Amino acid sequence: MSTPVGTSPHTHGASVSTLRFPPDFMWGSATAAFQIEGATHTEGRTDSIWDTFCRIPGAVVGGDTGDVACDHFHRWPQDVALMADLGLGAYRFSTAWPRIVPQAGTINQAGLDFYSRLVDGLLDKGVLPWLTLYHWDLPQWIEDRGGWTSRDVVGHFTDYALALHGALGDRVRHWTTLNEPWCSANLGYAGGQHAPGRQEPQAAVDATHHLLLAHGTVIKTLRAIDPTATLGITFNTTIADPADPDDAADVAAAYRSETLLNRVFIEPVMLGAYPVDAVEAFASVGTA
Image (cartoon, rainbow, N blue to C red; front, side):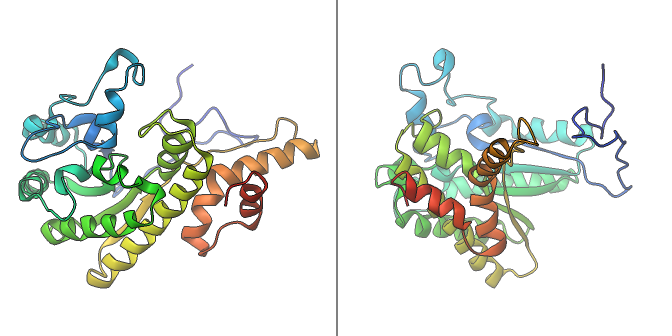
């Protein structure tokens, strides 16, 4: 059975209805730098944690890497032309942190120039650039110093954001700090399925806090110098329904899942504090 655009077969008891988009609704698409750019050692870029992770035997199905990917680094004019042909109004892309800051204390002008050309190309085609500062490709040199488990990463992220805003802020008006920080913290530092492949619950808790602190610091910093910019963050929220809504244990389990998957990230951003029950849950298993 096909599902019309704007409808869902999962209605949680509600009737199915068709969403009607307003005439000025902006359609767009999104990518991630490591997944499309390639050119991982071109014009000064150094390794990210995903470059390192992909070289671990068995870490990635088929042993695939991002060395070439879609070759967007070289093919971006054709890619932008395709976006225009599709009638996209916006394009959310991430910048590769190790392309901008290949080593501590350095800013790679060639990396800034690449994204400047991309932004100009998008605007020339009538496509608004929405820039994501972090889509999982932490520079390996930062991971070697503790990565997201170290509070020092907040300063590194702020410096990186300021460098990009200084180069592109006159043309980029929509900024996203982090893409799906839950994945970075939990899949990268607890589950080990994502780079850097660590399986340390305490590291995941530390990474969660530093990701959110980095977000807040950069939002405050950019808002102070560019108050008219649109700033935000992207979450991968997950609905947790109780298997039996009439069973108190199932309801409590679903609530715990919502807390660890969603509230731990959303409430610090929206309310300025972690959920008390989440802090207690972390403490009960020896993490804090």
